[in-house]
Image (cartoon, rainbow over all chains, first blue to last red; front, side, top):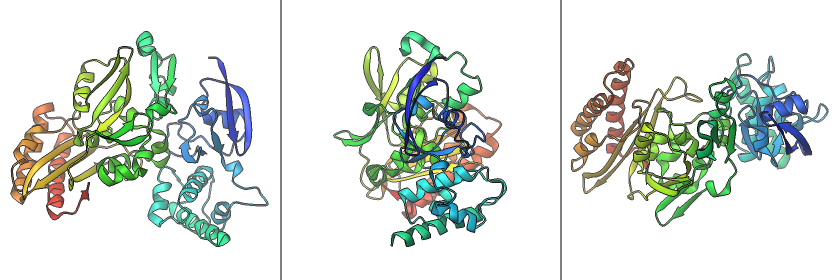
Length: 160
Length: 271
């Protein structure tokens, strides 16, 4: 397999490098850019652990060939907040005990961020629908849905 | 390119079906991929003189969110909204759902119900034909053509429509069985009806015999019961009995009866 040029804006930084044609966006993020917050769960688009935001939309990064995303904008969990300045979603996930093992959390956060970017005041049903492509096997969805509701409230307050 | 490389070349749009297939070695003969995901001429939704145009590389999310589709072709929005997860719908395309040819594809029964036409591009130019004819033709041989898009004629005002999906989970599941129906009543008498079951027939198709039975009748409870019974008969007539049919036929019959009852009560989508 040959290498081809890939230009991506990842968390605000422009990346310009040669990558193998067969790599998925997930592989480039994890193995080339060492952004290992994005997880690989099932690798077939079922679990949502690899969810990133591509040009404003939540997608499974295991389903996208990296070169197919050439020129696009990618947001990963690393771009969400920093340890001393957490994103409202990250604060709410901590406060509401919405993570246990943490493996699904980066994907959950990115699905939730895409939802709140599109719809700042989602109903509970809309939240459940937005994360229905993200499997969690230990925390339980109740806390996660509560955390997303809470984050929407916090964002609403900070903007008001 | 599709013609030159035959099976070695595949078109990728959303990639949500082909990526797992490539990775687990099911498509080891494929050496070339043609990525059409961002080809502007294959994307988008617009109203034309003929009805609604949907480019093949339009995602299910775009269909679900389109005010035009929701207003006049709500059946399609409903069906596309039940595919996969949000992440999948943001990538997967209508053209891909049709081209991938799964009998369980959710957009297909809806498109058939809405009398969609498909347009195809190849080295020989462009052709357009009813989606139903294309599906039957492709069952016999798959020509090297690229799906350009779909045209849906304007539905009659006040057409009822409904999409029902039966699957193991509410979200993120492949249809065990689905049903798309559209119906229009004029002066108390049915003058247009389409009934298309999904995940039951190798080639999805609308059930003409049942439709013929209903047209010209009043939408009574008895007509609904008879149409439901006839649906099960017609499906068995096309494919013969299958192991899953003991369950599926009973469910399908119940769903047809139920949806017709909803139409009677005026409790379904109005396109």
